[in-house]
Image (cartoon, rainbow, N blue to C red; front, side, top):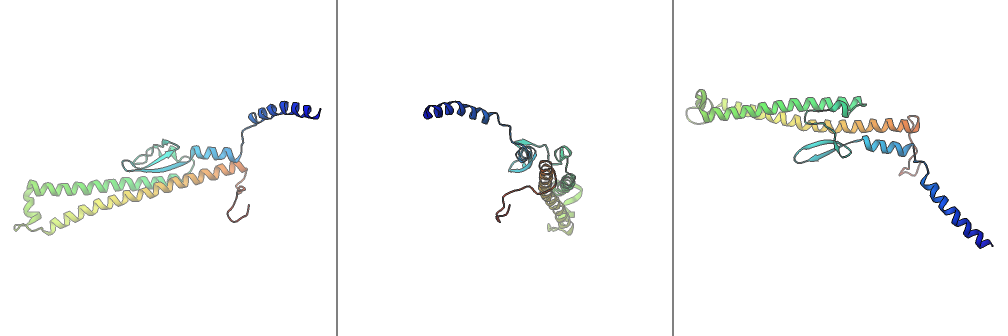
Length: 194
């Protein structure tokens, strides 16, 4: 009798337990905040052909060489927008300097090869040796071009800073929403404290 009651109880209760597991409410709070964080968080990826690109999930966020949709991408984080504005200013100034330096070097080459305005004698002298004008032009144009390249390279650090600041601000706001306060949530620690 006991065996039959046990079998009937197992036959009836096991499907009910499975149905209860399937209809259990989805977890909320920290799990939901973590999902939202992963949907909104930004990443920086490097490609040989495109350089540094900003992605949200698997989609390109639309921050191009000169900032693109930075206001939309970094919305909600004033510090990230400020870092992105610095990045944009560095990129634009660096690009302009780089182009001016390259144009200066190409113009010098044109003067030498085309013999424009008796440029050969001004730049190379009558004896064919480089003159101080040649060296000043070459070093000046190269220096301007290198300075532009350095500014554009430094702008990548500000782009990464902007992404990190945005992600930190996003984490803080979602943590405050999940816990209801700005308090630190309960997490495991390597020091053995909770």
